Image 1 (tube, rainbow, N blue to C red):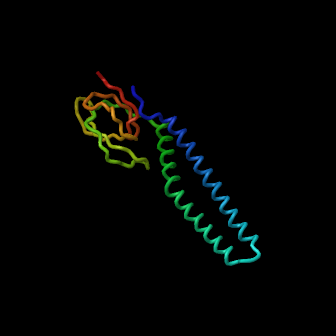
Image 2: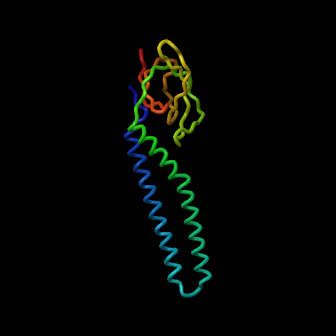
Image 3: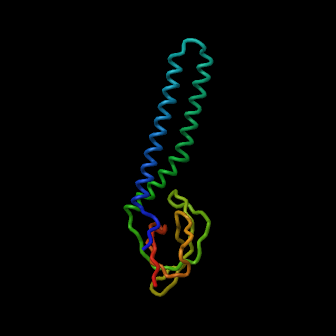
Length: 162
């Protein structure tokens, strides 16, 4: 069986990145906040210049916080939850045939995925089904009978049946 996603390994990587991102944000925020307070309380002359510098630093801190929590933090949070759920979740096994791989991007649980069109074989019946990949795979076997493991319709591993 060819493993496409190692949930435990990916979770530990994303969890580490999540912690590092929070640490970097915290250090930068504390340094900026310390600089703002130091400028504010130690200025004896030139109040206007100190106030302008303090206002500029406060605006940079506020916009930086907004950017951090709406982009990198949010993406890492979604990925962390996805891999955590995958690690703890139940994997579904099924037998199917892959029709084609699309470059269309779908967002599921906050993670960007690529669509794969398949035909699932259940009790002599064929059903169309969409699966998702974290990244496009060049050597994905088309028109071959596959035994796959999925989590929330994301392809985790597959085995070519003969």
